[in-house]
Image (cartoon, rainbow, N blue to C red; front, top):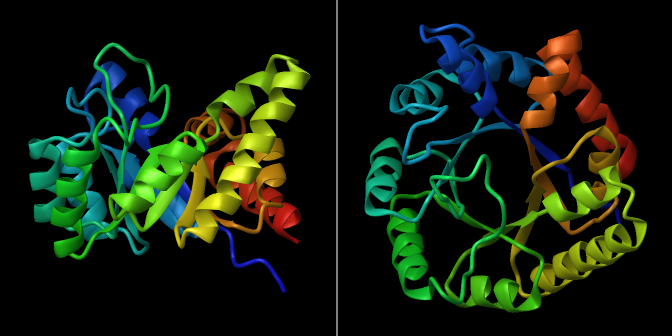
Length: 248
């Protein structure tokens, strides 16, 4: 049986990072989202951090109003973010861990430790008609806990695998790949929809596209970096082609 369509979500956070370095409105993450959609993105992801270091509240409101594809709001499990999500009603909300001192999201949620808070947040978001995903490491305990708290979707953190590959740690990369593969299979067996993201480039996206359980990749920093060399439209088009090769 053919694997399902693999969707590409393009994260525009770091377009906002460049804008915020000097202030003003350029480059505009909403315009970047339009370009990405025109190049083949199936959706747009944006992380509204508590400290607003890149995406701002106005960006989220404009993305929801102006783009023609689904908006996936990455967010911490806080009352402020739940209120914003319920008011904005994006297509999806991906709950991620967040620490003020980190450069980027450094790991997955500890679902077991946050079971009570996550259960309440998932219920609030579902009642608002928002699809909820949890950003987690591909550990059986976290995957099983995600199913237990009522999350319909998980997004597997691929950063450790990507880092090990980039740094030539082949044994560690192989172990991380096996963990991702087995985690995706476990999640699907529990009825969860499986997404993946963090640190992916053309080669790793093509590889992970071979896992039939994975139906969505969310990629941002790499694409914004590639856009400096050859343009965002070209970077997204090349990523879509890499994913198609892997899935095909």
